[in-house]
Image (tube, rainbow, N blue to C red; front, side):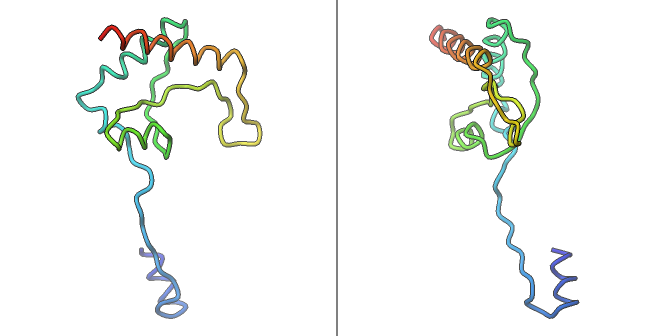
Amino acid sequence: TQKVEEFNKRFGEGTAEIEIKEQYRNMKQQFEGKMHIIDIAEQAMKDANIEPKIKAIRGGTDGAQLSYMGLPCPNIFAGGINFHGPYEYVALESMEKAVKVIINIAKMVKKI
């Protein structure tokens, strides 16, 4: 907002406006008290011989949108490499591992 004020001062009132809308929210608060969901995903990866790399991410992903609609949905890998760039790709082997993880999650949740 400070830049808008400076711009309007320099070029005339009403030249610039700003509207701030929330687009991407941090998913951390959606998992507070529900970390068992992350634990299940982590174990499913280990059972598929994948070393989990747990890190916070943010964005307009399906998982974030679903989480804010009341369905806590952590983002797990889909096998993609070089996301959002000209060299983005996914290897068949990675997709197969992602499928194994989803199957493992389904088996674990079925037991609950």
